[in-house]
Length: 154
Image (tube, rainbow, N blue to C red; front, top):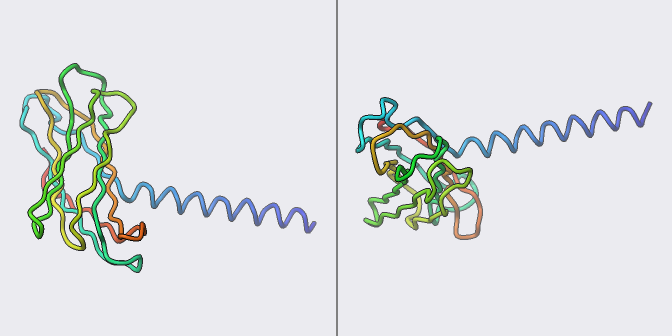
């Protein structure tokens, strides 16, 4: 009887841990179908990423990485640009292969606590499904507060 109770307790603990981890991983990604009609080569989605100290220390940098989740189309790539107004610095990353299972190289934008602007663009006409991983990090490697606010979807 005691053995059965311990097994149930362990299974419950593992389930709660996996659900908590899964929610935290999903909480810092954003995705959309950009240019659903497929006719606007200059379609751009825009987000505001707020980085703040939630107990892990002040933010040192924003990390971003983008993945094209659509079917492959030669010459049709997606990119993500991040800008921090306080430092007047911008960075960019592009998924180098259209529609494969791999994401772009991850990039960092040093800035600190505050609001970062994240934009998503593509290289040509055609709808693209994308997913962006977004994380704010402290200088000590601690995850800091990360909120995502949608400003524009095209």
